[in-house]
Image 1 (cartoon, rainbow, N blue to C red):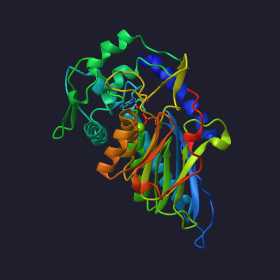
Image 2 (image 1 turned 60 degrees about the vertical axis):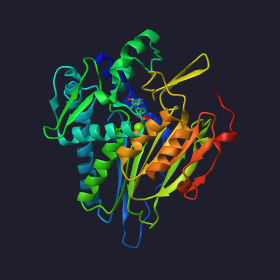
Image 3 (image 1 turned 30 degrees about the vertical axis):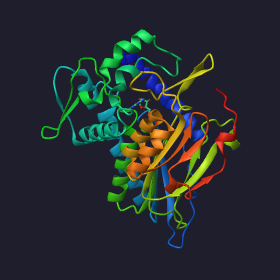
Length: 358
Ligand code: ADP
Ligand code: MG
């Protein structure tokens, strides 16, 4: 099983790379302009964590920027080696192999990301659940593999975040049931964006942007003294002109988008995509896309996935309770936003007026 997934993962890397080159999930509108202090935006991209990562740093010195960006990439490489679901050598695989057997002592980063994931599960009443791993492995969205209903039902008892036992003292993780699998695909990239930004700041960078696929975190101002401008993708884009439905200017914040258009196939008019409802094991039809804006990338990543499953109504209610901003494109294309966000968003195109294709 793991071997098969490895092959898919390398294919995914290439797909993501092409995808990001031509149609960016959350597009970045950045210009490498010079300010009076001759500050510039320096930028580097790398394929890591099964996706394309771009790190930008504003600096008056190319050497300083490069050193900082390399440090930030080292941080992400370290996380990739700890949290990779497909690598036998990762700490995550060690936890999964020992499910139902014993607790596994892990590094502070692995412990922290799992702790943050469990927090998101509690807040979303289990709509976000990293123990979805035993079910995600049944689906293959590239090869259009839809598991049998029976297979899904057999695995559902293995999905329950309450069966993840964390011990802070020993920094250990124990999965209570044999066969349980943690899949951090819904949180690891946002957490990596947080860690990369911390690394840039430690290197003295005052402004920058980290984009781990669609998980984006920005801080400081661009050399033209303006905040970073991020585009939110239209989940039913039909062509290039149609691609961005809204933009938002931000700094000191992260934004993540989860959408049903990223990894999917359609059978008999029904869309099957990679965000699964932990209660059913099937793709959630709660929304078309969810974008969340908050301080931490680990929060925006996990809550964009969880709120996608909760649906627009419950999702907006939860965001308001938590004081977090979000924009949700409901299953019929209706745009829902938290009140705070309305004046900050520039809506370019209202997807509600578009005819649904499925
Ligand atoms: P992407 O990884 O494309 O940015 P998301 O952040 O929405 O998209 O995460 C989707 C990934 O999270 C899936 O590929 C899978 O690995 C995992 N996942 C799917 N459904 C859930 C869920 N309900 N809770 C937690 N993780 C999930
Ligand atoms: Mg996510």
